[in-house]
Each structure stands twice: as C-alpha cells, then as structure tokens.
Length: 64
Image 1 (spheres, rainbow, N blue to C red):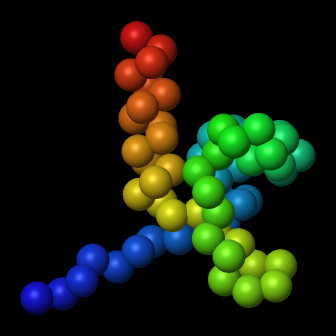
Image 2 (image 1 turned 120 degrees about the vertical axis):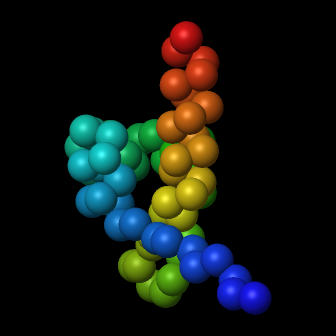
C-alpha cells in the first residue's frame, strides 16, 4: 500500500492562488492566518497543499 505523497507549494504559488502580495502573506503568517509553513532547510519553506485547501474550504464555509 502506498503512502499518499505530500504536495508542497511555494510562497509565490500560495500568493498567486490567493491573489495576495508576498508582503501580505508575511503579515497573514505573523497573525496566524496562514497554514503553518513546512521548513525544509535554511531559507526554504513550503506550504502543504492539503492544509491550504482545508483552510480555503473552512473560510468558504464561514463566508456563507
């Protein structure tokens, strides 16, 4: 049985997906309103796509 592969996206991809600037992404991260980043090494972070999608679904539910 295969383990599901974790898909990671860059900050730039997250910003494009949410139509926000890089600076805004840092402000949202500092405020705890972004999914926790995955630290891969010095200066290298990614965001778990599944966590991003879950957050989007939750926010869409709150907007209703």
